Structure formats: structure tokens, C-alpha cells
Image 1 (cartoon, rainbow, N blue to C red):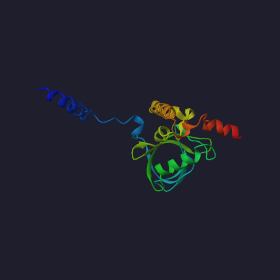
Image 2: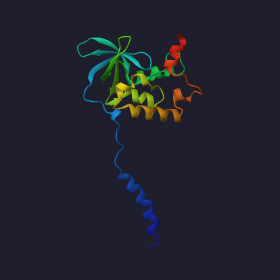
Image 3: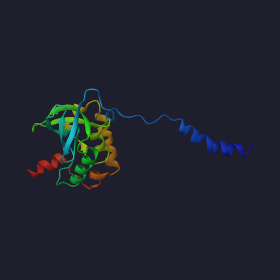
Image 4: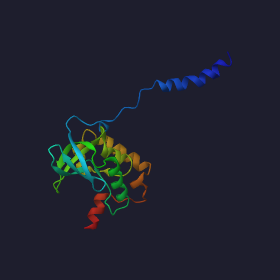
Length: 175
């Protein structure tokens, strides 16, 4: 009996862990029903791309809810490469339109294989939450803010800099 208790104490915890439910996807990880299917033609910087609609027309799209560093800014090239890796040319994606920006681009949440691309970029530290467009992401805003806080605390990519300059401040200071 003495040997049974130590053996059971080793066997029971792994069995209990095996009975845990799988982690749940967040709202931002699941593409909503009101999306439009498009094909990726190319990506620009870390938050813009060109797509082809099912009718054959092409348009420019800005990833909503986020802002990525500019090409000539620290971590800008890396953000662009990461977006290209997530959305290669020819990939089929889903857009949920938020608005149209001052440059005529569609601002939209982007989903690839049912996952939010913007949220992934923020989680990995390649983009920051863009509060200017966060109202259009009201169902998922908390996930974006939480992801940014986590990336910042873990000093991932953009957040590894001692004094990161927000992309919108960088653009304003260049003028």
C-alpha cells in the first residue's frame, strides 16, 4: 500500500490534464459570417495589400484595427515580410469591411483560414493596435488590446526597442 500512493500521485495529474477542454478560440480568431471572399494579389507594407474580387476587379485594402511600422521604420521590413508570409499571392481570404480611408482603400478585418491576420500581427509584435479604426472592430477590440499588452510585456519585435515610435507618430514626424 505504501508504494501505491506515490505511484498514484504520479499518474493522476497527467490524467486530469488530459481531461481538460481544448483552449477556446477568441471572437477575433473566427471569421464572422458577413465577409467577402477575395484573392490576394500582393502585399505592400505590414498592413496593406492588393486583392482581386470575385468579379475580377482589384482594389487596395488596409488591414483594419492595426497599424504596422513603415518600411523605413524600425521593424517595418519585418512587418511587411510577415504579412507576405501570412498572405501569399494567390491566397483566398475573407474581408469584413470597416470603412474606406482617405486614400480610397477599403479598411477591413482580414481573415485567412478563419483566423484574424491583424490580431496575429499584433500578437507577434509586428503591428500595434490602431485606435483610430478600433471602433469598427468593437466585437474584437478587447482581444486586440490584450494581444498588444502581451506582445509589449514580452518585448516581441516592435516592442523590443527601448523607445518604440508609434507608426502614426513616425508618419507625422516625417512630414
